[in-house]
Length: 143
Length: 143
DNA sequence: TGACGCATGTCAACATCCTGACACACACTC
DNA sequence: GAGTGTGTGTCAGGATGTTGACATGCGTCA
Image (cartoon, rainbow over all chains, first blue to last red; front, side):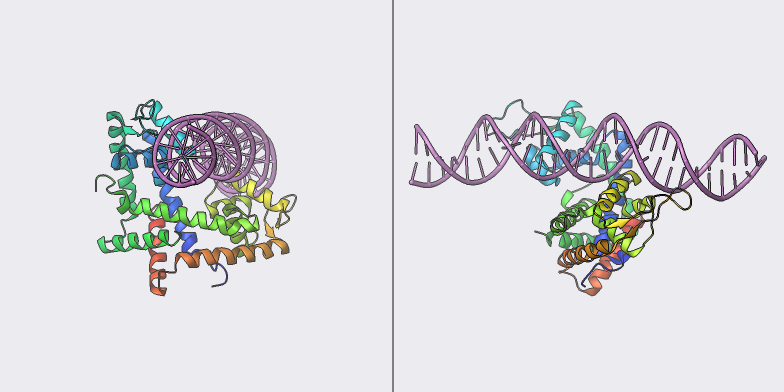
């Protein structure tokens, strides 16, 4: 393959389209909760791995630590998470969800699960597992 | 499934990661040509479907027509494409690649094809077809 | 003919994310 | 102890994308 052929047959192009469609649907699902996709991603990671610092959260969600810093401020402003005023060791300040944060996360997680469920409605269990491993293969091809 | 479970097992999460990794690799591949991914997408679509208007290009690449307008200006500034100064019918102005535009597109298309090839190195022909149809299924689940 | 809907191009304000830069805290080495 | 390297948090500027708004051109229909 010397050039990109028919765009409709390009895996990369369709991958981008699928991701864009998913992101749009997530935006719609999260709008009633006043959450952006970035904010939701932050909450979800934090729910599963409490105590992560700003930089660690940034790496987990594929953004820079500057961008994650902005997200954390917004969420802290709304009392969805807490950070100690000063670090106990080094400069990193471990972040924790508040009770309100866990409540909002539970709602958001349900909304996002519904979106994902809709996206995967055309697959059986084997198909979903296959798609997941295929996507992991694609992702890991670049590292 | 009531909530998003383990993020590492979430198809949506991994889809986002794969798309982000692809975009990063495309950025790297296109940087020597002084092209952004948005600009490349515009050129590629235009190469396959000459004469598309600003709004049509925007829809094809999943951005707003305002954003595409900016992209077109940049590309027109570099004489990679041409637009008639005024519309012959309605307000839409059909866009065409210049010879230089076709030349740059050919280079960019080769670079992007190499990236896609790297992403799909772990798949055989059947696997690629399967992944493509799976991604189309995901994309079309939202329309 | 005139009113209305609809698509298009464009301007402005705003949000988000990035790159570049700097200061601080710790670990390691000489 | 001083120098160096790495990781972290934060500020500033710029690039890119979005929503909101407006004017223009065309088609439809009463």
